[in-house]
Image (cartoon, rainbow, N blue to C red; front, side, top):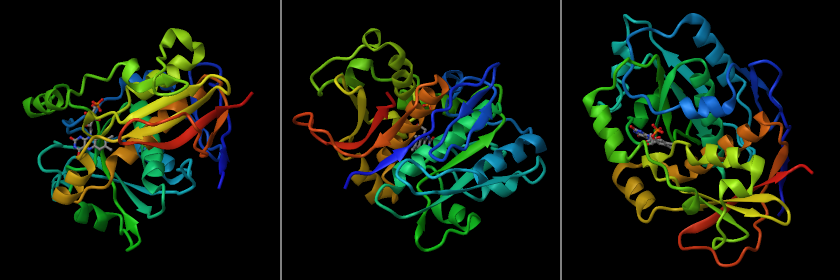
Length: 318
Ligand SMILES: Cc1cc2nc3c(=O)[nH]c(=O)nc-3n(C[C@H](O)[C@H](O)[C@H](O)COP(=O)(O)O)c2cc1C
């Protein structure tokens, strides 16, 4: 059945503040344009011991409690846990396998199970990440390197809720640890796939370059530089020139999910990645004054590549 969620366009306000839009029109002011925030964000795994100031903490908490439903209609709940400098050790027991050093806190989430819960979770959690980045904080998505049961206790997850991932948060240390540098190198964290591997025109065989599509180049570029689990970048987008719709597809990494689930009990993180891509695309559109809506009726664009499945389409308002 065809389902359409209407999104309110939220052009950037005058001056240097910007608005993060959402499916319910909850607009949140950010100091910088979304493109600057998106470019600035990177995974931070080494934090300074400086606690998060009361004012920043309260703003982030407020943002989490106002979190809207995702494009598919489910509404994950979020909770910020932080420590002061002295009781920082309390967070150590939560368990991040040594990947994360000295975070001031974590953004926890619990998600009720539904068919597109993970995409909605990716979308809403990434909104939090962008907001924290705008506040000047470092963050890191954790979908594997965290002990699910201890974090679940902290958010009092009920039986019908899951914890697909959490995020560490805090002021960034001036220098990364050697381990973090090695980890980034191993994941190729600085690298992203080129346009030709990600974005297409009128089917998966048509090339699409930034020069061809004017104002749409930025929203796509913000998808390209988004974070993804193990930096696999599973998003593929096909532009339909006749309708100007952008169709989002998940192209799975072979064996990735089966292995992660079997060995580590992880959630299907590539679906979370799709929600992140949708968030970046929509936030950038809103910030540039391009309004539109998500629709979920799969187009007929011919044969899809192997391991590829349709997720959603962005329909600009005419
Ligand atoms: C859904 C998701 C799960 C992730 N899980 C982890 C994790 O468990 N441990 C970790 O160190 N990084 C994790 N990351 C961070 C990615 O490795 C990182 O985003 C990617 O390598 C790109 O680097 P960047 O975020 O610095 O741009 C995760 C990212 C996403 C989006």
